[in-house]
Image: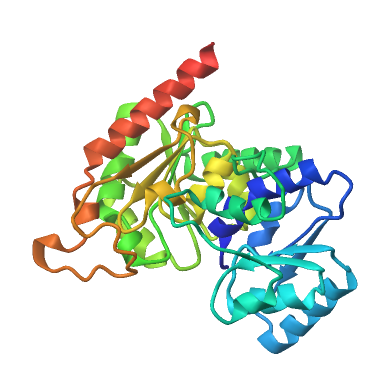
Length: 343
């Protein structure tokens, strides 16, 4: 699946547009798997999935025809790649908003030029609706889960308790996501393993490891260093994953999709950053229990998928982030959550 975090980060736009246009028909197009997280969103009338598993030529024509039939008045392209620009143009909307980029920018009637100032991903998206007179009124990401989805997730956790004799529902559940799309974004697996041990031993909490379809090698490296019977949730459907994360007391993640899912379902989230920019990709409030951890190094932000430094400097940004520092953040977050619940 693609663009999961990107889709989550656009959810404030949906609420803002609905507030200004309460009677409008609002549709959202995106990658098939990622947009499943928008199901149950009360501010949307339709979700249009783009299925990348199908031949691109066939899928693009099918989606373009569907969008054309809707006769949209306004189309906003928040992504701005060649495919999304073309699909925006093919909607036939009178007003088409997209980024000012050479060549494909001509497919939009309103081109948005980024002002170059430092901003979060949410603030970046807000520029697009501001360009057509819609003032942003929402700034928090959100995923809407049904009561049934939450209940089924709780039942699943109870089943894990019986199967593994490990998860006690009376204990706090803390989630860890050690994977990421690119190696430069990954904290060291052995440190995740040590962190899991600290959490279990010192906080009396249960630890869940979440894993995506490409995280097998990384998760194995964590499990090989971790305490016995660590529980791994492999490649769950996104909405089931979101529902399970909603039951976690704290969620710790590299800069990856589950980090954004966790914050959007209201779980206090600790994001671990190396090559990426936490001031851009972690637009989550410390006051709501969210915390980004990052160490300053001379090469940050490098925007690299693979670290190109050598020797002791290889992955220095991640090596400087200690287990003790991350554990202290988990401990503070869990204590704050308990204090809030008791008042």
